[in-house]
Image (cartoon, chains in turn cyan, brown):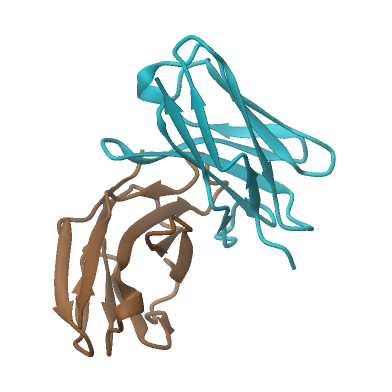
Length: 114
Length: 116
């Protein structure tokens, strides 16, 4: 079974631009969660999608948004990029997202904002 | 909201030794899940072990075991017979059982270095 894939793996943008990251979950998984990892703040939960609906959202500004498609693939978008958005963005898929279901992580997208 | 604290930013041990990584958490919930994740230099997060709070028995996975003390809100990871491939960042994480509204809440991590 193929693992979680994320594209692109690396991205360089400039302040003010917007960016879209993609995540393809493991086949059969309906929950996709997104996390931001930075040296200062560590790993922080962005949001979770289940069956095309945002079910949970972390404490991030509205510039961070996402969506999920009928095939469970998910995208996250960051508008009006700031230097502080430079981070490793990880997505994780699971069968149902809760009940302690194991979350399988992708390799991440490294975003650099100049 | 839950918080997870890992008090050891970095640890270094010799190969084949046993090492214990500490984790404490704070929650008002009674049912939840605890996890240890490993993140090697490749940045790929890998689940090491999980524990359901309603289970008193400590989870074990080969060389990895936990010491779960629910009353003390402590969840330490013991690695026996450590190997060079165990070198990585280790994150302790918490998830509510009732829907994971906050997703996984992670600690800041412990950088474990296994010396040859």
